[in-house]
Amino acid sequence: IESDKMIDSAVMSVDEATDRILAMRAQEDTGYAYRHYFPMGPNGEIDKRINVSWREKIVTWSYNVIDHFDLSREVVAISLDLFDRYLATRNNVCSGNTALLVSLTTLHISIKIHDRKKIKIATLANLSRGQFGIGHIEKMEWQVLAALGWKLHPPTQYSFVYHLLQFLPLEPGSTIRRDVHELSRYLTELAVCDSFFIGVNNSTVAFAAILNVLDQINLSRITVAIRERFLREVVTRVGLHHLDAGVETARDRLRSMLNVTAGSENQPAMAYAQQHEQQQDNDIGSLSSSGSNSSSFKDPRYFDSTTTNTTTTTNNNRQRSNSSDSRSRRRFMANVSPMTRGQRSSSPIV
Image 1: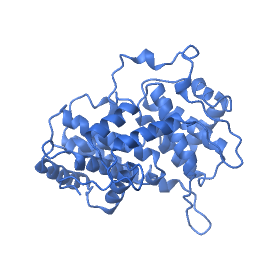
Image 2: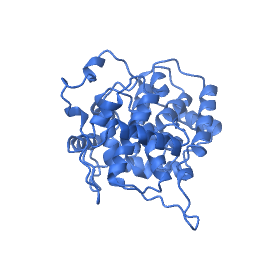
Image 3: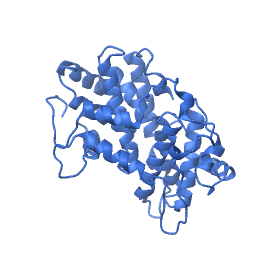
Image 4: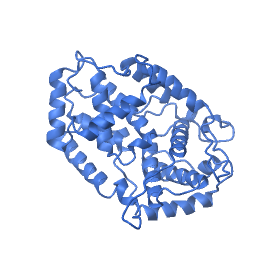
């Protein structure tokens, strides 16, 4: 995945970043726009209702699969983009079993196309506890490809984060640049989990994530002048304004996702991280619905290492841009940026 590979390379020019962002924004507004995949109703209306419970469990399970096999977490964002757009072509009408099969299939497609490491389709089929075989996934793959018109390279929030940060005038490879990038990526991972962001442009989500991170970083690390220059560059070059209603709505939603409870005014984000981790340790694979007798997916963390050749221990020397696993990323964010409910810094970005 390009945004993963580029983190440790030289920073691109702002002109190149501008061209790429404009191209990606054109993509998200046309061929990859979520709204374009819905069939029209008899009166021209569109029904965008989704099963939030299904989707949340699928996202959590997908992240666990990706972490277990040491793949890029951006794969999950791509998989869910394919998943959401495919279900949109069905007017979001499907059974629990179908949702499970589609999620397996879009994850398979995303890994095959967007990650350097490959996972056998039989391994993914095994995660369904025998509910689906290789043939089921292959058949669904053709259905997904046809429904999406082979549009399999969506511009992700991660890619927008990387390119937008080229407008932040900091030294390449500096600690603060890496901090901002890592924290912004973490927030976009949260956004993938939230069905609220389906249909919201990924450029908007990425920009909102960056602004929320900058808002929490001390002015001694990133000065007002640097922040103001960043905002000017973004609005002038790619047309994203930090006061746009859509950006502010996305920022508020991302903040709310870091609140543990409505009554905790000053609880640090670490508490959220621990709560979220505990939720993943529960039966994250079970996905049930009325009329569905689907059994739970396997949590890959509980695989017997003697029964699979693909384990994370074989990749100890593998260097990835998102080298922090989900736990360390949450702790890192909690230590650097509390982002507590109602808290404001002295940053000019409000």
